[in-house]
Amino acid sequence: MILFLSSSIILCLTVPVCFALTSNRKQETYEAIFRCLKRIAVNKNLNFKPTTIVCDFERAFMNAVQIEVNRFISVYS
Image (cartoon, rainbow, N blue to C red; front, side, top):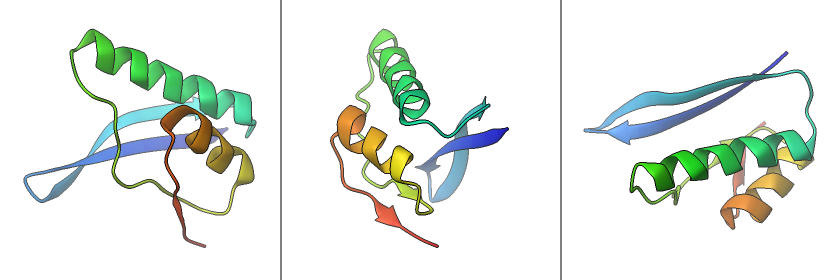
């Protein structure tokens, strides 16, 4: 199982907003997660435009971010 965590900074606090357990580390899986987050944002009349995305060096995740979020990411190891 792989844990995907999304958080947001609210009033100077980092607050988790999404947890997703996946059974693989495939690019398609990460893309599906981002599509789901974008769909939820649209349904709530919100903009899904993260300003910062951080991950370890995982090429599938980085590719999914560039495709679905159209952002470059910082990589921390």
